[in-house]
Image 1: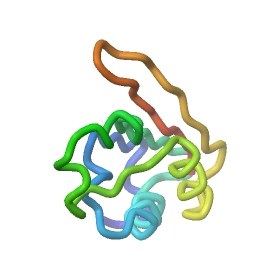
Image 2: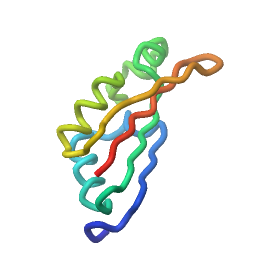
Image 3: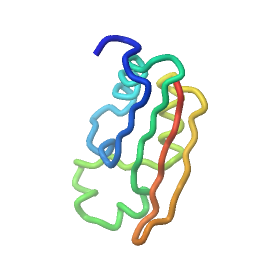
Length: 98
């Protein structure tokens, strides 16, 4: 996509599978318009570690602090995260702006 194309980007439960999350975040930032917003949803690392499939090397697990650090490294502003208790797990939504 051309630079400055999107106002918003939302990704849910997919960052686990990206080989280089920082590179993906930098690409997201490139295609976002100034002031654009990004939201990434994941399940907390401790909850996912309970499942053997997440320990096969396919999944890359993150904490909220990990996501904020990577968003900041990628050049995003106001990087932060919120957590929400769900029925059987805790979710993290990392938020940032270009």
